[in-house]
Image (cartoon, rainbow, N blue to C red; front, top):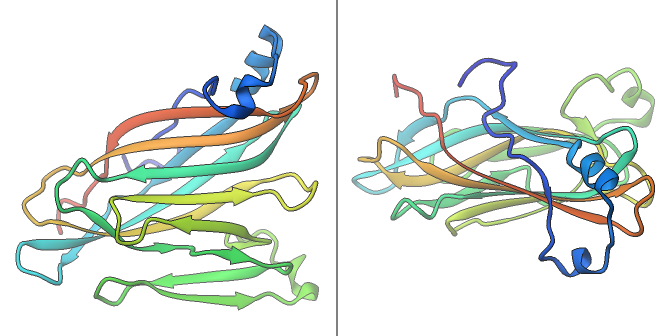
Amino acid sequence: MTGSDQAWAEPVLEIDEHTERGGAIGVDQEIRVLARANRLAIRCDPATRHDGPAPGTQVLDFPLRCVAHAHPECRFRWVRVTLNLSETDGAYVTDLSPRDEVSEHPVKISTSYSGGLKFDIAALPVHPELSAERGTEQDVYFPKISVSGIDFGYAMWDFTAVGEEPLKVDRPLRLLAAVPASGSDIPVQLTLRALVTARGAVGRIPLIGRQNTTIPLKTNA
């Protein structure tokens, strides 16, 4: 998948009946349809392979973009993206970008890779007087993110709304992972979770979508 108009993964969203929050919410069919009308999707480019730190290993640099677009009558409170690579023996996450971010001011995240098992990440503040004219840049934002998974077989990003502000997600993500050099396919289990409020709903509605796919790899690496 390389087309800019295609999603690498966009699982069907369902109301998660098994969460503690879900058990306390009574939702009718109208609210169920409305909740599922929210969009959570991941786009990506093929991963770049690099020589790994040990013989027989490679490092994958995997660029993604997460999009969370709420239905006009819904509002996201948080969104969680989980990529599970553990189906491949020996695969584990070595770094993630962005890492944890909590800021009251917009920043621009610069991520580069120059070898090894870590990204080079710089957070550059954007001055308030410049933020309006630079607001069209997709990597300028008011961030509140937490991440986990380094040295494990999964990666997790949490995007959280600040106060009562609506949560809008259109974010570049990058994952660095060590994998066996012999692997031709790297399977991934993607899980997208979100908490939304919807018109007419009593409380907040938990959504979940799951999809199994593989990381696209550059053929010329």
